[in-house]
Length: 219
Image (cartoon, rainbow, N blue to C red):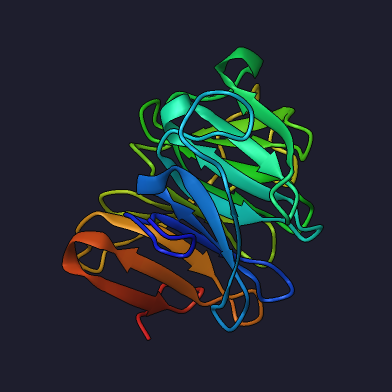
């Protein structure tokens, strides 16, 4: 396909400049657009070496413009610069993942990864150190609230959970706050508006996006 043509995209993220990053899953690459949705650049091809992908799904951008891509088929998360230069990766060999799906970054730069097959949300430092895990049934989407504490997770229903400021794998699990059930059918993508705290959910099988307040009220 052409440089800006997409084939089964599954993830999208926006950086502080308004640039848009899309995981072009079917083409095993990331495509970058300007805020006006003008094609800018792309990177990645199919493969297993650094910078290559096998069915990339989630994507997230940190405040310092690091781009995190969930390379699901290769069971890893890869980190890139905003221009697509490969920086590092976390994989099974580094205490990483089995079929990861979604990814989010909080204001401190810590990275949350939804690992569906092992039923976990994992939290890492920006350098890839595992900070904590949370057991959740088959999570696919994850987002972090503007307070940096509330963690939103999508699976067959929708739940909001809370991590402590520095979760430790050896302490009891974070406190469950509430479940939102608005008749979802495989909710997948999640995004949180940092200014209002409103939560947007892509309800995949019902072909809709739903908006909720931070308290879970449909708006």
